[in-house]
Length: 113
Length: 132
Image (cartoon, rainbow over all chains, first blue to last red; front, side):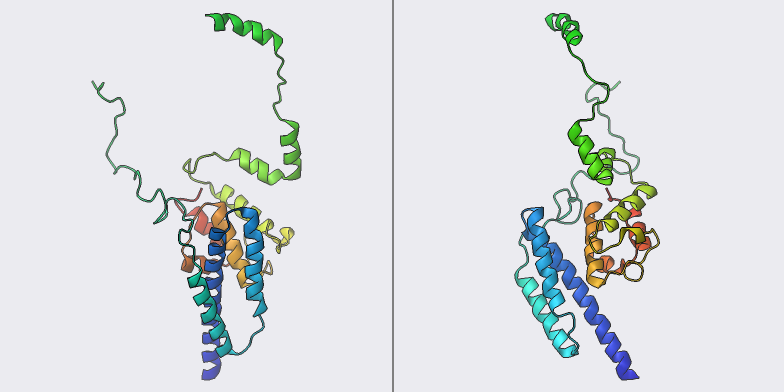
């Protein structure tokens, strides 16, 4: 019973690692592709790499495959990834933050009554 | 002065049809009703008013329907990606990334991993302050 639970827990952990790895790799593929139409082929190739090991059953082999793939993903990360402008690291991050509550900006400079 | 005098003279000689839909736009609309209507109906700024809930639902459903492995007739606002739409876990990752791009969002990896159904995706996007 405990081995079954242990097996399932280990399997769930591996599935989560694969999902995260696929997500990061897919985002990185988009970063490397300079045009959208290039991305589709690259994404399809990436998916094929994952599908190639879909039916592996041995847990230790799966662990090794994930380790290898994670190392490969780390080595080929894009140095300047796309970041949504408002997100940390994006071009608009902390630029022009809205003024605090209760502060009013007067735009008719120098002509106030 | 000269321009003001010229204006009625020019206007007398120009005929503009009341409908300004060009054949190209009409053809595009016929080919992709959702895409063009969505594009025309959307303000070209990232920070207009916040999205309405209906708009979020409509656009999330459109994203799902355009995924190649999804049967568009099965897509409902209550569907679960894996149980109802027959996607596997990697397809779910792709769908969540497509939703992220549609709304110009950056969802942290661990939160994106938890989105496994349409209600969760709609809730996440509708509650996100930067969804555009």
